[in-house]
Amino acid sequence: MSYTSTFKIVIFGDSQTGKTTLTHRFLTNLFKEDITMTLGVDFHLKALEIDEEMIKLQIWDFAGEERFRFLFPSYIRGANGAIFMYDITNYGSLAHVDDWFEIIEKEINYKLPIVFVGSKTDLVHFKEVSTKKAMNLALTKNADGFIECSSKTGENIHKIFDLLTKLILKNRNNQD
Image (cartoon, rainbow, N blue to C red):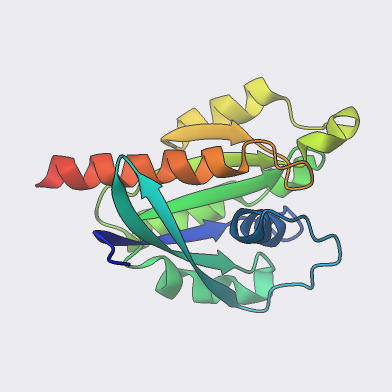
C-alpha cells in the first residue's frame, strides 16, 4: 500500500486523562480497562483514508506525569497535529493546560492544528468540567477543534482523528 502522506500526531495532557485508552481504541476498536501507565512516550502507526488519500499516522502517546514533562519539547517538535486531552470527570486534569500550551508555543514556530478533547463521556454523571467551560478554554488556547469522547463506548473516537487529519491536510494545502 502506498501512502500519499505521513503525519506525526502527538497526544498530550495530564496523567489519567485517557490518552492511552483513546489510542488503543482508535488502533484496535477495543476498550482495554487495565492499561498500564505510559513511561515517556508510546509510538503507534495507523493507516487512514481521508478524501481518497491514503495517510499514515504516527501517533505519539506522551506520558502525562510531571516527571516526564521535560521530554515533551523534543517529542512535540516536527509534529503535524496534536490532541490535548483532559478528563471531564476531573477538573484537576485541566490544572496544567497553560504549562502544556506554553511548551508548544516555545517549541513550535508554525501553525500546529490542535484538537481539544474531553474524555470519559460514559461517566457523564460524574462530570466536573462543563462542556461550555472546556470549549471556552479551548478557544482561549486557539485550539482548532473541540470534541468530547468515550474510549469505553467508542463515541467520537474516529471523529477526533478524522478531524485532526483533515485539519492537517488543510494546513498543508494552505502552505503549498
